[in-house]
Image 1 (cartoon, helix red, strand yellow):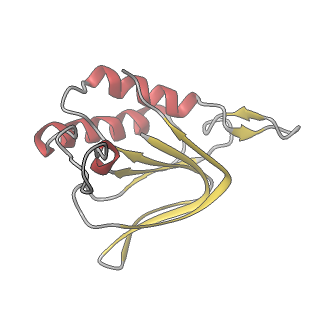
Image 2: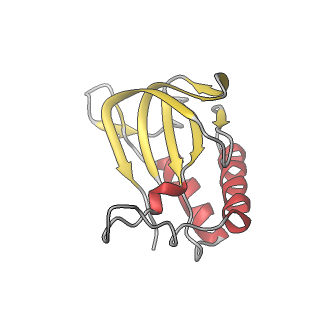
Image 3: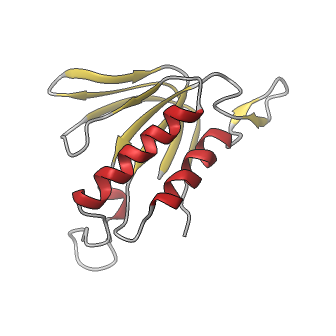
Length: 145
């Protein structure tokens, strides 16, 4: 998963805005074939508890929940593109839709069940235009082996 702290973000499909947030996290989420629901629950807790927003002294010491931030979750199978060989990425490490879709939905549900902020989404498998104003910038890779 790629997490970006944002001032605002939006996702569009066919020029129609389907998800939009203010201050919070834009999450690009991908899954591998071996990923399981236990990782989904861990990732949701990690995202909500990660302290990357500034406190009154400017130190990254507040979570998205602490700042009443929103979440925009966008599916991104290309996160598991392998570019080590050749010139075209291989996506054999990315989970196929029959595995990835349920995990994606469980992840979104886990976030919605644990946060008081808004949780918006992209559209799984669609060609999406994502717009963001990165705050910081703060961009982190989150992964649990």
